[in-house]
Length: 328
Image (cartoon, rainbow, N blue to C red; front, side):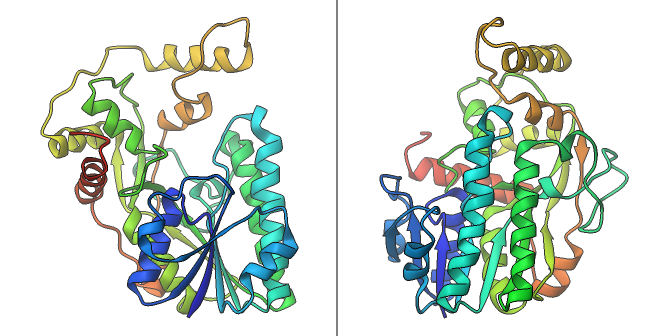
């Protein structure tokens, strides 16, 4: 199958492209002009330079593709970045949909996020795709724009495009050169952990998320969304596993999480009156103070999805960092 991929040089995108290549698919990956393709080039796929705001060029690049996987996105949770979020997540997705329809692509798999799905902040209750998003998480500019993108994808179903939405939780693993959750592993390696988050999250292995996208091309039901979770663990346990993987004990400052959160909030909302830039976005700090666990039962049943355990995904992340010179 010939598959067109957006964001193929990103964290999730690289895992998707790697899984596609391993499965024998012919891949065309579009990336922004001037963006880093250091880790994409060795995968041996066709690389096209272009922008998501050029629907005609997107359609031309997609010509002849059987399917498209749209992983490109902006993950900021800062309202000051709303113009970029709207441009990439909303208008960019709309353009990908229009280009897919114009190019005669049969199926579109869209990479969304669990930020568009509700959760309980209760470790005894695990959420699935049916839980509505409410509260402060629903007001995040990231969630707002990704929900609009999901709506655009679903609407394309009525126009003849088969669409499947995947909602990965917190992704951990290889190719994390832009420093998502790998940032904590690197901070631990350099003994620079700023605080210990009191909450918990659902972590999924990057390689398995990549394979889920491949599975969605043939096994996903058109019009459906699939939550991709994994190990539901508290952040304290996450850091314990990081220490084991690195075989290193590191110091976690005894700072008040609540004080650091309020300071970060003030630095964002009252800049430049409050000097400094938050080490972690206030929204993300608030999320890290809660416990949001997810269930992947639907993806397991219909896509054959399984995520490696937290120790394996952190091992994969650390090994990739060692092999690529991020750590010794």
